[in-house]
Image 1 (cartoon, rainbow, N blue to C red):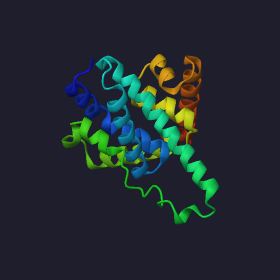
Image 2 (image 1 turned 30 degrees about the vertical axis):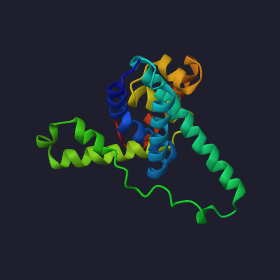
Image 3 (image 1 turned 180 degrees about the vertical axis):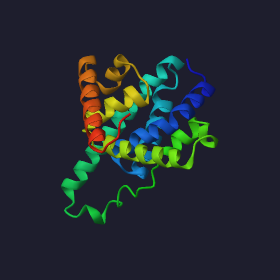
Length: 188
């Protein structure tokens, strides 16, 4: 059984990554924040009594389901209303910055030249754009495997598909990203 402190520590540890993953999916900061908060509340309310080791998989599954629910509600709303611009926000305003994560995780800022930092920022923006262009399932599998660093079995369980499907989605995502980035002249 997870203690209240273990649950709190877990939620703090996944908060930023879950938000960024949700932003990649829904392309709307406010909606992504709502999705993450809803997922955290569901985990705490329904699964807070589970062992701490089970929390990561449960949270990933809840986050995936909450994201799918958001898309379903959005689809239903757009079917009901002819002019959705009167009822929904403008969408992604461009404030999301992938560099925030790298700035906090790397301490090489002082040794990096301005030109290197600018080039790195440009490359990361290009990568972010290409990740957003991936089909939904490929993007989901790619982010879980390489951003969240989940193994194939964990990703399959979180996505509700087979391990073979995860491998296929990841392979297609990597090939699509490498092809798109090569076309832009980016070699990693």
